Amino acid sequence: MTHTNTSTWGKIEAPAVLVTRKLPDAVEDRLRRTYKAFLNPDDRLYSSDELLNKASEADIIIACHTEKFTADVIARLPERVVAICNFSVGYDHVDTAAAKSRGIIVTNTPDVLSDATAETAMLLLLGAARRASEGEMLVRTRQWRDWSPSFMVGLQVTGKRLGILGMGRVGQVMAQRARGFGMEIHYHNRRPLDPAAEHGAIYHPTVDNLLPHCPFLSIHCPATPETQGLLDARRFGLLPKNAVVVNTARGAIIDDDALIAALRSRQIFAAGLDVFNNEPEIHPGYRELTNAFLLPHIGSATRETRDAMGFRALDNLDAIVAGREPKDRVA
Ligand code: 8YV
Image (tube, rainbow, N blue to C red; front, side, top):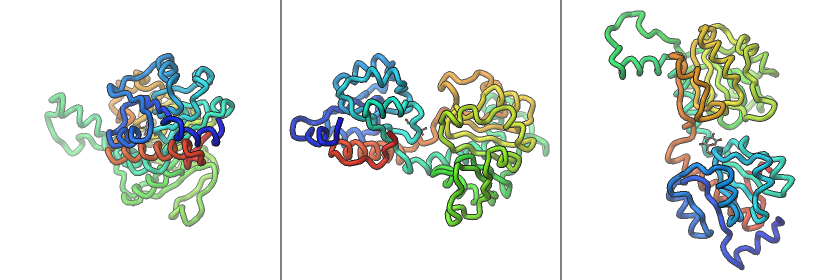
């Protein structure tokens, strides 16, 4: 595909866009105004074969993290597919090297979901620290029979230290929100932020340096081959005893067996998790833990953010069709 080719589309017929999942109405309306849209009104999850079959009529695919574009799937995509515009900031579900080698453009939707995701991280941090899951279960199952000064005592968040692993867009919003709770921010990132953007946060050059300073830890780095299983038994062992671990990034960053063992032994006080390895078939060990506060990957699930993600994906699509460089190109 070349940009010269794509920019001629408008003169022949509207480019065909396959949308893998049901998107907000306003987003689908805008899409339909300009393109030949193949939508998924029932929001069915396509198998790879179905996806490939449907892609036979598409020039561009708007995809979510639920569709896995492995090297094999990308190799089997029809010749006419020129771009995958993701409705997500994370793009670990796309083999970008394979896409690049076939000349398929890949985009994502950064920025627009930082507030919503940081809200979820804060919810998990507070919920895990204050034993929200356990408390809610007591109420719902009529096991709440009594009150005493020692009943359901959790950890106070205010004024504590928060470690942020990955100080990108979401990590920085999380830091800002946590400062509202008087938290002191420590972080690790591939590079330190400019001092003006740090707002006093303390940089640690390695993950191992950061962890001993973190009674609370929130994960905000992308899933890459380098971060796969980054938080393993050894690294969990570097956290202070009774730490709280929160993950709104990707399940792949955590070694599930190691976290479950640390939660069972109470070496880690609690975890708040919105993302998991192998979603939605998560490690069964999590379901048994009362000190795990679990959400079903809803980090960015607010009305405003879903619309904004869709419009951002369409902005990228429009740019590609017009032969311009899309703002959020990742491959
Ligand atoms: C999205 C996410 O809801 O954008 C991301 O990377 O993890 C989620 O917040 C999901 O990926 C949409 O495809």
